[in-house]
Image (tube, rainbow, N blue to C red):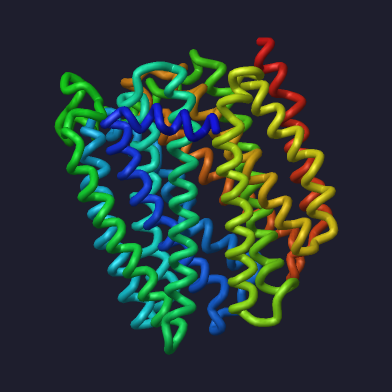
Amino acid sequence: MPVVRDLRVLLRLRDFRRLLAVRLLSQLADGVYQIALATYVVFSPEKETSAAAIASAMAVLLLPYSLLGPFTGVLLDRWRRRQVLLFGNLLRGGLAAGTAVLILVQVPDWLFYASALSVTSVNRFILAGLSAALPRVVDTRERLVMANSLSPTAGTLAATAGGGLAFLVRFATPGQDMTADALVVLLSAGVYLGAGLAALRMPPDLLGPEPAELQPMRSVLLSTVHGLQAGLRHLRNRPSAARALAAMTLMRFNYGALTVTLLMLCRYAWSDTESEGLALLGVAVAFSSAGFFAAAVVTPWAVSRLGTSGWIVACGASAAVLTPGLGLPFEPGPMLVAAFVLGLATQGAKIATDTAVQAAVDDAFRGRIFSLYDVLFNGAFVGAAAVAALMLPSDGRSAVLVVTVAVIYAAVAVVAPGFRRR
């Protein structure tokens, strides 16, 4: 298989292997932690969940970081990225352990969300650092395309495996549900610590930026605003990267709206108990992750023939056609197929976007640009959750929402060829 051959080529690169190990452990822990949060917030028998409650939780967890995220990009371009991966993962391990304690003592919701926010904020910082560091461990553009296809997708599969592990631990734990949730969160803390220790296998200066670009903390804080302005000017002068980011933001919005829809369907429309709804959600996550894996197999071939813009067009067009056909019946079978298709389309477009941005942006600006990328990514998801909260009924069935998503996908497919011509 071509994907196996490509992976074999990349794994010959020692530094790529080591960076990949950090990504896999880090995102494995993310999968465990995120499922623990979902089961506690959405599927806890003590809570009456609504679309508005899900949207509020997403806003609390993602929106504050989306507002502060650009400042981390300036740090990524001035701090050694290997140290960010090391200390960031160690910090997440400690914070996740604190979240487990808060679940056990049943603190007010705002305090629990504040703890979860601290973990997910560092998470976005690390994901931006992993993306910014990737060009430092591969040696050609062709390998960079392969790395962008395989590395984030492998991380997504690791997150899926972490989610599966979280399900197993939770269902296997006897006693109260909160004890099981706390145990799963504590497991994620241990894996975060392992990810931090794995970063020690890389030299401190390997992932950049160059030593001449490093600055003390005081200078970094003073230059943050100017650095962000420079990053935006840099992006404005690279229209192909800016347009790819715009298309990806719209597709992420759609994915967020359909995620909230799926959560509500699993919780109320397709199940009679919380455990049954949780099991259905696990199956849907598995189908979506299979789509992500398929994107890793298909995207290098598709980009070589269609280009990054052409592949984004194909992903948007296929999603526009299939979303209403599979989603409007609101039945588990078609929706699971839709989860696969949208996983493939979303991840395929993201791989193309990552490659376009990395190829067009200079190394000295990559941290800032990828932090802005994260802001768009998370802001679109939060916005989608808010829109879904307004449009979704209590059981999650909204034909208007599904049609709206299909129209946005179609708009991406129609406009993207114009990007390529210009």
